[in-house]
Image (cartoon, rainbow, N blue to C red; front, side):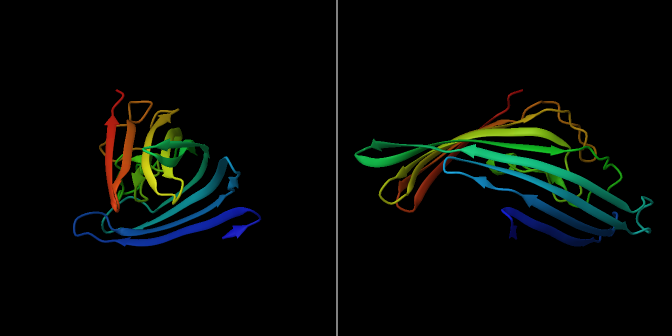
Length: 219
């Protein structure tokens, strides 16, 4: 929903978990969010705030842990700049872009050790997950965060039809605090940055593209 220039959305989910030997219960998630996209010809900035609300109603026959409530405010800002220039290669007119981008996230720490882990796991690192709020999949763990992801992409587009011939990019996330929220029996992160990712893709023939990626552990 768009109102007065803002985008308003609400995520809602109800899940009932059942298992023969593990904790059973119901989980209700409500996550209202408000963002303000500020889009200009050469750059954009999108601040967003939300309140992640979770309720656990646990089966008393499967656990002694009391029912749980969790409320977490989440703040993020995404922005980028787009530079363009005309160029040529192999006799073809091309448009080259240079696109720096940043994504900042702040989430305060909430103790979550008493919350059962029904479906959360660490997300594999990729260009997509580096620019997300939560490093965990599922909703049983919401990471504490004071972090920024930076990256840059360059593309070569054909001027006559807009086909993307080549795309190259690099990205990395930087952590400004130690990690407090973890999965059961998993140690906290020891580094102040993520792995460095690089990727390149290109169109080699009509309907055919080639992709390659590189991941480097800076530790």
